Length: 302
Image 1 (tube, rainbow, N blue to C red):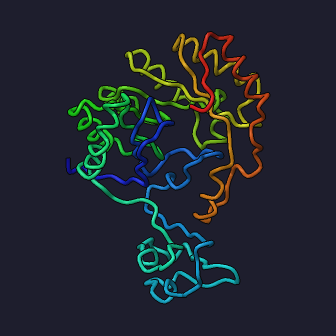
Image 2: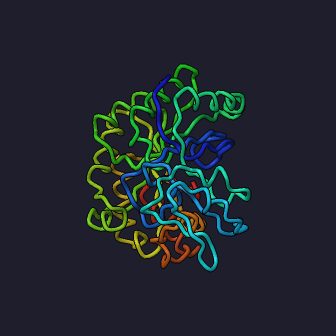
Image 3: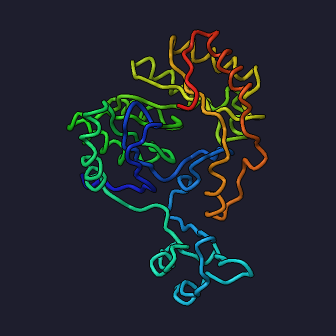
């Protein structure tokens, strides 16, 4: 219960991170860097500072009180010297308008379980549970495993939303205490997978096979990204892989949207998906029909 980890959010009453009403715990840190990532605050393994320029009243308190003198006024906003900033959070504590916020905090299994246990009546009423997401929860395997075991003691349904980019040994150990895996297949071409995410797909596909061979439940999810993985060749290969490995599966299609762009601006990080267009409805319908031909049940939106 004293195992510690780093998270960046706890979302209650979630209905898009697994079956029914859930509490989603977002782990910080991810080995992938997907161009379309909708949780950029979960990519870094450390605590980060977010600047909400629309909240800034230019009072100057953060500049005066920054121990590292890492903040200066520009003509329109406060700029941060990322080389000098140590993410101490002092600017967040002193800011009267919440223009500065800390993203991520260290916590323990006990502290997270305290939050989860408060939501147990909702799980009982809806057959919901807890989902561990991110970032990549398997990047903090010891912390994840401790939480899964504590939930198991309370008979709470446990889902892990993961890229499965982890060692086979770690995946097998986590699987012994997980009721459902939510797993993306981002691209079937490993070279293109690496181009758009930073890693190849061999380990991910191998771990999907590993989990299915040992009887684990997996919900396949396909982020549908225009111009990247929505061509018929890749879609057919993806559908064939799922059909061959998990016959009769339900697949979630997750059409790309630009809702996360504001998060990148707050983090002062360039948005890799800036040139990606929203998904056309006719293309979504085409993809649903294509996957259905492989005997797969398709749900749009997850």
